[in-house]
Amino acid sequence: MADPQGKSNKLIWWAAGIIVVVVALLTGVRLVRALYGPAEGAAEETPTPSDVVVRVTSAESRVFLRRLGLQGTLEAETFANVSPRIPGTIEAIHVEEGDAVEAGRTVLFEIDRLKLEKAVQLRCLDQTVAACGVRQAEANLEKVRADFHKAELDLRRFERLFENKAVTADALEQQQSRHAQLKAALKLARANVDLTTEQHKQAQTALEIAEKDLADAVVAAPITGVVAMRFQEPGETGSPGVPVLRIEDVSTVRVSAFLPGEYYGQVQPGRTRVRLSVGGREAGDWPIYYRSPTINPRLRTFEIRARVDAPGPGVVPGAVARIEVLLEEREGPGVPSVAVQQRGGGDVVFVVRDSRAQEVPVTLGIEEDDWVEVVEGDVAAGESIVTMGQERVEDGLRVTITGEDR
Image (tube, rainbow, N blue to C red; front, side, top):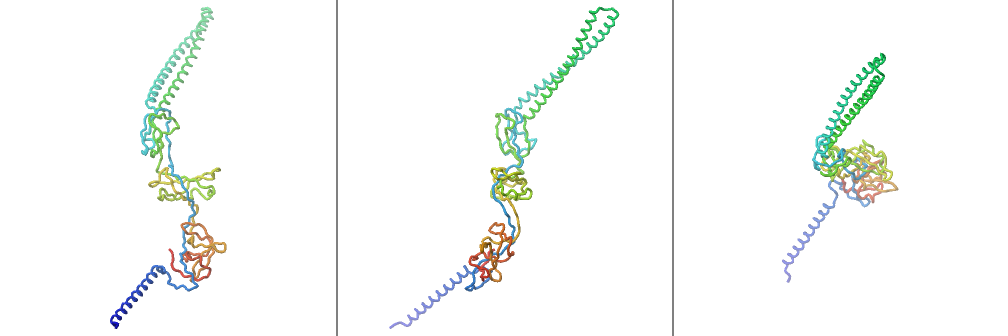
């Protein structure tokens, strides 16, 4: 005979199991609703069979920039390739790459200094000899002038004596000959003074040139900056026009880039700006101060330059910069790019008004950062723009908003 107590226990266990299953199902339903239900703060609407479920984003008033991205090179705004002023052997170089130099004070290198010092000494002796020659010529001129004056007096006296028949014709002729010889000697003495005077001037000029060469043998920094490159070493032959060192002023650099010719009219020096990034770091916005006067006819490009004052770390000559040329800047309403649909051959967005989607034709402008400018269209900042589910939306259709993207 069956045990009534055993049956009662089985029924209790079956009932308890059913209760556990029901509790688990209810807990699962709540968990699913918590994970996939409407976003916090969203309207808790129960969609009807005719509603379309959508997500929206508020239209915003934004600043839109039309920009052109490219690469440019950083260069020193002021630099100097320093070469010898005279040919000769480089005797010493007093600076290394990276050294700071000061204009007119820091000695960079020397060319044949000892040789040029000896040349100055030799030219000093030449100048002294030439000065002595001038004094000698002037003294000789004084002597000849005195002799000529005596010959003139003697000739006049003999002419009077000859008139009185006190001397013979031969004696008079001898005095005339002596007068003529001394007159010629006077001209020669004067010419010799002129010659030695010019020789003295020539020697003086040669001395000045030698002193200038000696001064040029020691080359000082023409600008303040740092030694960027060293092209030659002591013992090599230096020549004018062949650089020994390159000095760069790194306190101000410039960025140079080449743009396609089609943008020439859109770049206005003094107004158009560039945004720089060097090594992944922002380096600020800077005005373009130079635009090529013409477009290269072969490459169809033109150059722009912008000056960077007080450059930060890494903004040094030779670095490659990421450049954004800010061609145009406008402020106005904008919508997310994903909200734009092609309907009827034009661009439209759907604006939620009174729980219905309204199709709004728009004319679009600048697009950046996944937002697009609305140049024309009945869209105001703050209005809800459909950004998810718009493919199923039609004009005037009721919609249910499940969430709003910020």
